[in-house]
Length: 295
Length: 295
Image (cartoon, rainbow over all chains, first blue to last red; front, side, top):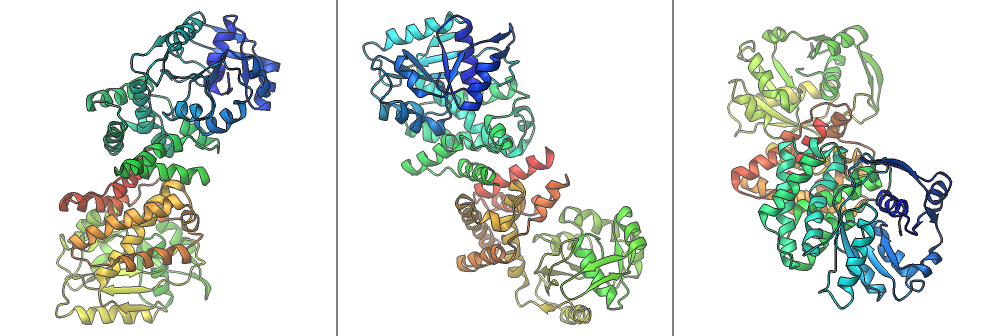
C-alpha cells in the first residue's frame, strides 16, 4: 500500500487483518506510529487493533505483486518515477485515488498494468464509517491478462471483507465520483462546512448546478457521456448520505496542507482551456482554494 | 449622523470637533459608550478625545438640517422609512455609504433632496488613517437649490478639516468605488486576507480581471461608461495604497455579522439578471459570502 493516509490505512488494515502480506509505505513519523501502536480500526462491524508492517523504504516494492496506490494525486507522478526502477515486471498497480488523471500519469512512467478503483464510501482516520466498496476496472480496452488480474484483485478484497466489483464502465464511474468531488470539495473547504449544511443554502445549490453544467460539457468533450439526470442523482446522493461530512479539501485546508484542488476543479479548468470551453464557476472556486492554501 | 460605525464616528467626530451641532444616532450600546467615553480620535495629524452627542432616538431628526447617512446599505430602506415622517421638509440627506443603490432607495420614501458622497479613504474604528476625502454630488441632473446645497455641505466639511469637493461626475465616481468594492471585498472576506496578499496570488488577479470585465458590461448597460484602463487603474490603486487592509466584508464575517454583499457583488448579479448579462464570477463569490454569513 503506497500511501498511509486514511484510505491506505483502511484498505491496508482490512487486508492485513485477513492475513494478507501487506506493507504500508508512508512518511517516517506515520510509519513509526503504525509500527509501534498498530492501526486502531473502529468500524461499524468490528473494533480491532490491527498490526501491519509499515516502512518509508520504497525498495520493499521489489517484492510486490500488487501495488495499491493511495498517495495524494499531487504525489502520483514523483512517486511512480521513484518506484519505476524498483517495481518487478509482473507487479500490478491499482489506483485508489481521487481524480481522473492518476492512471494516465502512472502509465506514462511504467509499463506495468495500471487499473483504476472507485472507492464509494469515504473513510476517516478515526473510523465510524461503513466499510468502503470498491469498483475496479481497466481504463484502456481490457487486454489479455486484465480480466484475470481484476478477478484476482476482487477475490483478494472480498476475502478481506471488502466488497469489490469489476465495473462495466469504470471511466464513467470515476467521472461520476470526480463530479461529486468537483461539486462539493472546494466549497466545503472554502466554508469549512458539511455537505448537509451546504445544500441548505440556495445560493450554493445554484453554484453546484453551474459547476455541474460546466463539468458535463468537459466530460462530453473528453468522451465521457453522463446525463444531466445521472449527475443530479450523484450529487444528491452525497448530500443525503454524507450530511455531517466535510471534504478532504476542507480537512487539508484546516490543517494548513496543500489540497488536491489542481486535480479536482483545477483539472476541469485545465481541460476547459484544452477544449476551449469556458468554466468560470469551476475557475472561481479553484482560485479561491489556491488563495486559502496560501493564507 | 445616522449611523455610528467607523464612517459615522469619523466624520461626525470631525464636525463636532469643529464646533458643529452634531448628533450621532446609533444602537444603544454604542450610543452609551460614546456618551460616557467620547470618541477617541487617533488620526495622522492629531490625537484627541472628542465629545459628541449620541442617541438611539430618531425623533431628534425633527430638528435636522443635514442628515448624513452612514448606516449599512442593508439598513437604508428601513431607516429611511422610519424617519420619513420625522424629517423636516428643508432637511438635506447626504449618503456616505458604499454601493450605488442607496440614493435611489432613499428617494423612494422621501421627497427631500438626497445627495451621494464617495469617501476616498477607508476609516477604521481605531484610526491611524489619513483623513477621508469626500466627493459629493447630485445623481439626478442638478436642480435649482442643488448647487447651493452642495456648496453649503462642502463649506461645512472644509471648515471641519475634511477635504470635500463637488464631483463633476459623481455617478461615475460611485461606480468606480463600487468596482473596487466588487473586486476586493468578497475575496478578502472569503480568504480573510489583506489586499496586498490578494494581489500576490496569480489566480486571484485573474479573478479580479474577470469580475471587472463582468462589472464593466453591467456598468455600460446602466449607462455608466468606465474604460478598461480606468478600471485597471482603480483596482491597482487600492492594491498599492491599502496593502495591509482587509475589507469591511472580511471584518463583518470575522465578527459573525451580516455583510453588505447583497449591495456589492449581489447587486451586480441582480443587474445581470435585469439586463440578461451573465456574471458567473460575481455570482460565485456572492454565493460563497452568503454561505460564510451562515456558517
